[in-house]
Length: 116
Length: 106
Image (cartoon, rainbow over all chains, first blue to last red; front, side):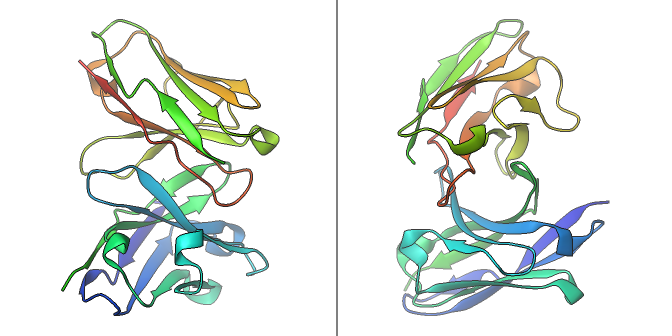
């Protein structure tokens, strides 16, 4: 079964850091571009970052550039998002999603709450 | 690229046809436009990619169309499970923006 499982979310104070992980199974992880997408409470999805199969192409949403870093470990079938200098507006559910003509596979999400 | 969806809310009955619109502020490269369905507490589900191609296991009552800056999602013969929020997304040029959504309600 194709599956993505996120972890690492939680409550953090403004200015703090978190590292999200996404474990992939059921498919050849190294063959797919991967993405992080977030969704603030009551809002629509917002694309955050994308990383190609061999890290050649990495893109970020402008508002997270310089604060977030996406990475992957193809040997461990894992995707990561290092989030630093967190702000209240970063609060939301963070999903990892597999890209192949649209985002066809999503995880269940992990909740990040930035609050003092 | 800014994606603007209309209407914000669409009220219809089972059996009717729904037409959702997604307008882009500039042409979507390669027609790389996707539609998603989202229900409360769930992740979005891919319905259509490439503007008009149905994703795996999506019923044929869902159809996508359009090109350039104007795209539509049509849902024929609405079923009770189709009432949800729908989003378009362009994945042709980063940042891969989403529209603000259309809520389809009974």
